[in-house]
Length: 111
Image (tube, rainbow, N blue to C red):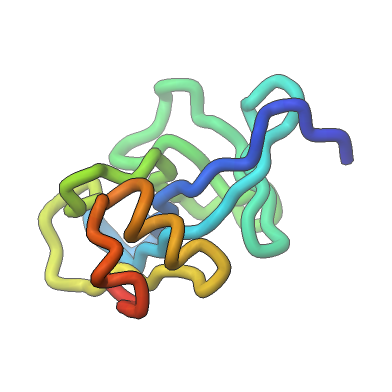
C-alpha cells in the first residue's frame, strides 16, 4: 500500500447513529489519489460531495464518517455535541502543541 500524501493528524467522527457521534483525533494516511483515507486498520473512501452530513464511508461496512482537519480553536465535530473527542496517544503532544498551541494541555486525553 503506497502512500504519497504525507500522513496528517485529522478528526474522525462516526456518523452512523445520526448528526453527532463519537470522534477521535488521530494520524491518518492517504492513498495516492487522496480519495481513500486509512486510520486504525480501516479504509475510508471519499463520498466526493455526495454524502449527507458525512464526507467519507468505511469501505468494509459502508458506515458514514466525517473526516476533516482539526480546528485550531477546537470544536472539531461537524455539529455541536457534548461527546468528548478522544485524542490518540501517539498524536496527543503534537495536537496540543502544534495545532491547538496549548502545550500545557499535552497530557489531556480528550478535547
